[in-house]
Length: 284
Image (cartoon, rainbow, N blue to C red; front, side, top):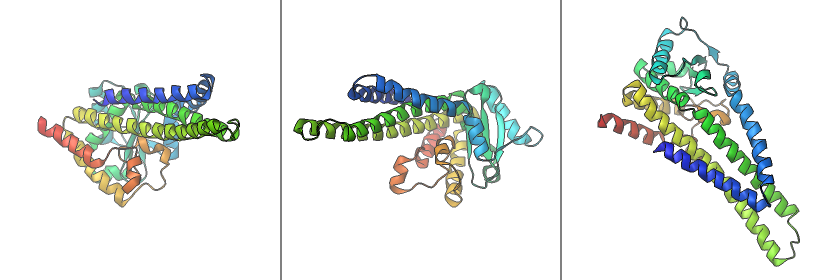
């Protein structure tokens, strides 16, 4: 279901991008914006692991340094039939974890010292299974493609507003003025829709990773119990120095989002994630 939803949302992004390109007056504008966004996101995609690990001062650990952590990651990667990811630890008391790497052969799993302190080994296994599932399903690639298209749409929308306001023709012409207003309105709606679709894709991949992680660990309650603890832990100790652009990587949002801000979160509601996992456990 989540795979189909991701595909549908990607199609919507494509439709919006093509529509904006045609409104500008052809495909050349769309190609230019898409190429710029693609280059920016490919650089981010190719070097994402190095960038984010350096950003949080993560250090790679060996089997001798973290034997239990290594054992769990090794066993899960064997079950998932992917190469053993590299393991990093972030010195931060805010409990969280993320996976990165441009493909399974370059997979990375990172955990904070805070998450290792508050979770049991079973709960930690549930979290790591979730991250291994992200690597197995190439979610970094999917989110990069979505970001590329959303970025291109945003560039085109800004371009449309600029040309409509400063180069939109004779504003004294009643029909032309109406056209300019329509272009500006559509460009705003398109950029906003692209942002919402990108968020929806991120949330869909989180649900998919929850499901995949539950199967890999063998017990959905491992992850549901962990999510409950992580949600409470981040509320008490958010990762205030985290970069907002990296928020989608983490298993739970490193920031506290309440009220209207929660609608624009990169993660699904924690209560819904826990409910789905518990439903999976009770159906077994």
